[in-house]
Picture 1 (cartoon, rainbow, N blue to C red):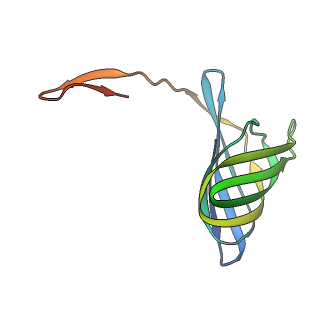
Picture 2: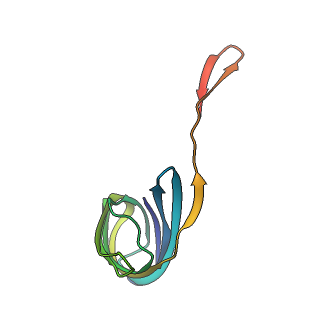
Picture 3: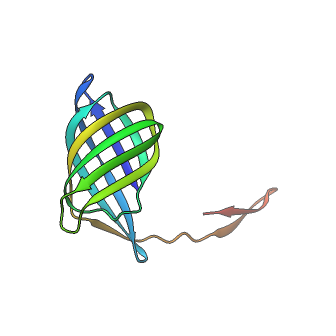
Length: 127
């Protein structure tokens, strides 16, 4: 999953940054990234890719009109072409070059349901 934000200076120069979240076995890694390029305006997006993140230099073409997508190429070891799809706002597009850092392991994430009881409400399922 890619959580991205782009800040544009009018229609033209822009900076982009975010984090890629990837599951590895029962653990999760976060790959932070940042860079710049050209954009039609600022925006945010949340996208998914079937490809694993690759640390190193990456280039991408992003387009969003509520549905967001990115076509890109990672130059890092084991990298190559990739595609992402998801959602974003506001409508626009960008071409960016960014550097993806080595992963930060955030460890195991367990979601355990617990049942709590509140007076007058009966059982409540909480996560």
